[in-house]
Amino acid sequence: MQAEVEPVVREADENRATYEAFCRSLTDEELQTVIPGMTWQVKDYLAHLASIDIYVSEWFEHQAEGKRWRPTLEGGAPFNIDTWNEGRIVERRDASVEDLIAEAATHRTRLWAAVDRFSPEVLATKFPFHGNDITFLRYLQLWVAHDPAHTADMLKGLPGRREDADLRAWIGQYRIAV
View 1 (cartoon, one colour):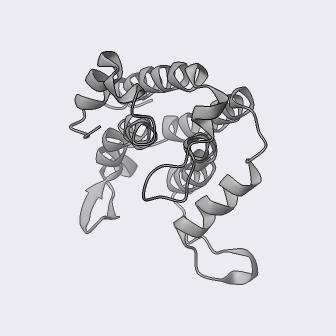
View 2 (view 1 turned 90 degrees about the horizontal axis):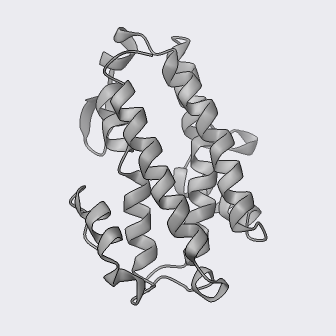
């Protein structure tokens, strides 16, 4: 693994451990809470984070191999990340927290294996992301905030949990509002 990626992976893994501990602490009632202004329940964020690395791993594997990647949906329809995410969440509605955490770990292992094959050239490759051109290294640096960001989303439906000082500090270091 490239030296500049190692601290990013370490931070992302630490964030995943914090996120998993939070998820394991949730009650069944909390997991079923719908987030205000959203259609997702708290548990749907677990399903999202359990499955998003499927997509990202495939993308990263193509990058590591120097291949262009243009995903499509079944039948060749243009890819839409929101449609894809929603399908993965629906597929996982009956999964337990432990099943989702285990699945996420499997996909994260695949993702890091692809990142391990990133050359300096891949890390320096730019691509459009939210209106800006960023490098893969910068994307990875932003990726570490994915778990804290979705924890903040989950907390929007859990007012009592929002006051947890440790969670607020963890999320706050990424300048994410709780």
